[in-house]
Length: 177
View: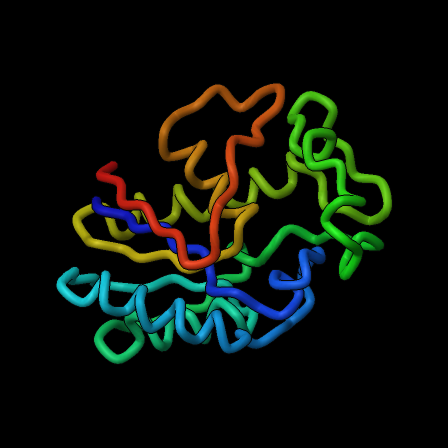
């Protein structure tokens, strides 16, 4: 199975360096340009199916980048991590290392625990491995599920601090699993 992970293009909250969480935003002008460049980068790739977070920013990214040539299936397991009271707060107020420590499993202020997020991402990954094992799948999601899926695909030890580098808007990576 070939799987391509894609993070959605930029929104206004991304630009303002504020936490999106599950706030349903459209792409901003920069995001619209990013997704057109992404479409050009992916134009020669053949995909059998596209799974996408049901939030607008992912749906728009998927529709513009591959939606005219592959079936798109919204899947709520790909939705962004719930950020509770931190939604729309400046990124600097979010201690990411605490919330990405699997052993600590911090979930105060209404933030979805890392265990919950990894469980739904693992459930999604197991589903597509079983049902689409001989296919080329593209997944358009958010930074937190993208990061969790990458850890799972690469069979990393799921323990301790799992925050590893920034995932840019419209970043994509391809894996054979």
